[in-house]
Each structure stands twice: as C-alpha cells, then as structure tokens.
Length: 297
Image (cartoon, rainbow, N blue to C red; front, side):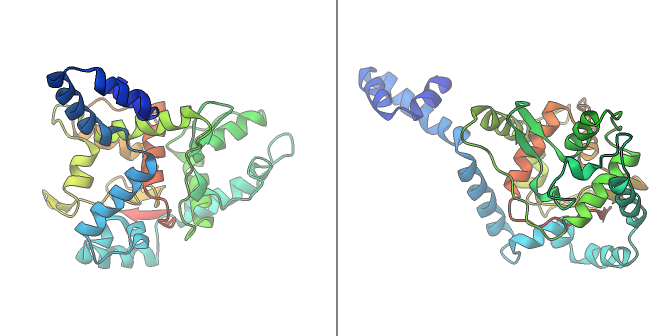
C-alpha cells in the first residue's frame, strides 16, 4: 500500500480516482495509511527544513554556523578545554603532510590538481552524486578515483596518506559552507539520499539504537558523562584527531564505531551504505561551514 501511495503522489488525478473507487471502510484505511506514509516520502528540501526547525526549537541560542563546532556548541565547559587544545592542534602535521602529497607529482608527471581543477578547497562540495558512476562520490573516493585514473595504486581509506590528504583539503576549505546537491534529473541520486536517510533512522544492533536516537531525539542530553551532539553539521569537521583514538581518523571510522557501540556489525569504510549516509547527513548540514580538521574527545 505504501509503495502505491508513493507512486500516486506524482499523479494526483490517479490518486483521486483510486480513493473514490475504494469502499468507505477501505477508503478510511487508505487515507490513514496515506497520511502516515507521507512524511516518509518528504522531499529532501522538506527534510532539511524539518531538521533545522527541530534544532532551532531545541537550541534557540545557536546560529547555523555554530553547529560547525559539534558538541562544543552546546557544552560550554568542554568548549574551554577544546579551545585550549586548538591553540596547538595535534593535526598540524597531517595538514603539512597532506599539502606535500597534494603537490607531489604522480609517476606520469600529473598532480592531484589535474583531477581537482578548482584546487584543494573543495571539501565543502563533497560528497557528490556521480552521474556517470551511478553512485555517491565522497572526497576520499574521489582521491582514489584520481589515483586510479593516473595509474597509481589506491590508498587505504582510514589511515596514513589518505587522512593527511583529507586534512589538507579540509583545511584549505575552512569556513566554506557545505553545499551538497541532489540532482533532480537523476532519480538514482534521490534513491541514494533516501537510503542514507533510512539508515540514519533505522535501529541497529542489540541495543536497538538508531543514529537519530542519540543525535536527534536526545541531542544535548547526557549519555553517561558525555553530552550528545546534534546531527546538524556532523560532517563538517572531518578528518578529526580524536583524543579517544590518539590519532587522526575519518568520518566513516566514526560511523563504524557508532555501530559497534550499538553492538551492530559495522560496514567497511567507503561502503555504499556509509557513502549514502554521508550524502544524507551532508545535505542536512548545507550552510554549515567546514571546520575540519579538528579535535574531538
């Protein structure tokens, strides 16, 4: 029934004829199902508006740009310690190494700049929908796709040179607002967005938690001794030096960790599931400035 309703949204005349043809009791059931299903199929723009309204009501003192600071936007005590760390950030070495890697020629004499004609300040534009590839292209995947096109071996996604490159690209993109598009001329892009959205609200693992359980429903509340951050802007500060890890890491490593904490089986870095999830979250964060690389607990 829900699939039929979704299909009918595009054809209101057909929907009206269908409702008229249904007996009274069935008609009432159909209308109730329709009203319940409608939010599940909201357009991305509607999702984004509802997302922001939720946080505006929950944290009326915050501006959209404040969400680039993650949990420190709502945890004033922890913010002081964080600002002290940021005076001598532990990720500076990664930025320097990433810059050197970005400027170093490949074996064929070309550079990363040949794949990124706009230069290095492009982190706010990713993830993108790759119409030719038919999938979401994250910045990390774009880096490896570049290397393949230049006949270079791919890099491991969540450590070493890849993280340093991402740190440099984020650093040169700082303060640029996230600007993710969902092309309307390719229904596969919307499908990828919807899959990411479904993943975010789906409950996972033995603890039966969804991402939204912590970061939408309970944002600002404490889980044990930690204040839960808001989802808005969650993709803006990566890669990050996490004090818990004692090293730099990427967004998908954090996704994996969250699933493990709910006692669910994590997906591989840059899996379709995680890339679609990043696509949804980044679109929700449109307008939040890039603040990575950063430091987090």
